[in-house]
Image (cartoon, rainbow, N blue to C red; front, side, top):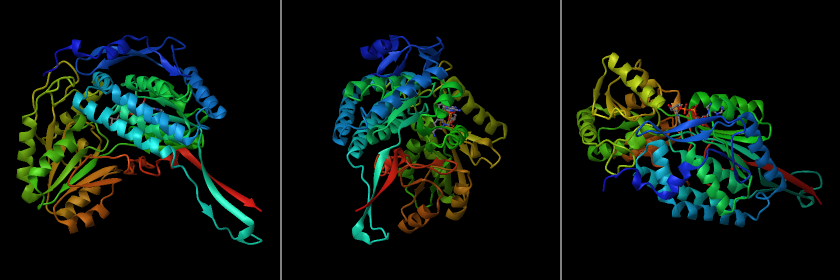
Length: 498
Ligand code: TXE
């Protein structure tokens, strides 16, 4: 049944949107200290959806002080790990029970398909919460034999993992709820407190998440949210002396600035940055499987995915079939609001981002590069047609820079070696995929491709148990997996003479 208009919106979402703009500090809604606000827009219409608080330096200080006090008095850190686990499991249950409302709010502020919002933004988030909840009870150290005077029987040496303190989490707008949780979960599981700053483009679900976490039993002050842009709120958080760890997902340029701020303040940091991710299609690949695989890998969430495929290198014998198949798939897509369950092409997140992606396409067109698969999109809202960009030169901007939109380069290569060389010819290295049925080629190429995640015969699938992060300028550190909490804990050595 197609979306019938605003009356389909969950009453809880309507009520949330009517609230006065506020920050979430010390377990309570707090108005802006100086009255500054900014507008949040519905990408499907370009109309204002809500207002949010532009946090001042003082607001950020209040949030960090609150988180610090909560850490110092141990209201969360000193709970039994099993109790932290229980609270996080309750949070997963609450989010699962309110999945439709969270999904709708996410679609309204971000523009994405309601299906993706339900399945990934909320559905996968629930899995991530339960995974991280389990890690709370798995923190452990190691014991060591030491060669100190008197012999081993006089010494006991071991390590403890202790939470670092206040975490500053800075999240982007492409998966606002899920990526916010990728900051919040390891912080909470390890006993840290967190101040989260969502993107100023999509601040709403993070605020709602914090309130839900309080309801689940996360004590006041342990999880605070400040909204606002990078220049004031972001900088105030990254430079605050009481923040011990920064966890950032976003652009490489901002990531570098945050890395500098982290070093200046001697803070721990994790950076998950952009990608220019290749997909290498070998001539023995099954085109019937590559086409849907790359439709998902390249166009999921309008290509606004850090791990999205953006440069396809295909061995010559498969080139025509692959281009024809992808073009046919694109031309059959329907366009509309993310709330319309039939719409497969949804708006991009903001007017600025729409303009950025359109500029890359215009540059390619001006250089005479062939574009295929474009479809008509509405003037209202931040829509951009998907496109295949055929054999762009190395000088075309969209070959080298992260476009972060529904634009997929397809380049014909003579053989796998040329494909590999071109795939690796980038300063980024987040993710990559190989498409082949030749196990030998797959095993060889997975070792030689420079990327933090390499998929074979799929693209874009991530899992809480699979470490994720970038090579080269795609970032530093890894999220997820059994060692996820290492980045949120200090390793303390204890050495006892007896
Ligand atoms: O990112 P920024 P933007 C890429 C994508 C996109 C481009 C720009 O190519 O087109 O980045 O997007 C906060 N100190 N990705 O401008 O600036 C900011 O408020 C502290 C890839 O949105 O990186 C927001 O919360 N914080 C990506 C967050 O950083 C600062 C996802 C991200 O913003 C700050 C999104 C500062 N000085 C965009 N400046 C991915 N890796 O998934 C900004 N921020």
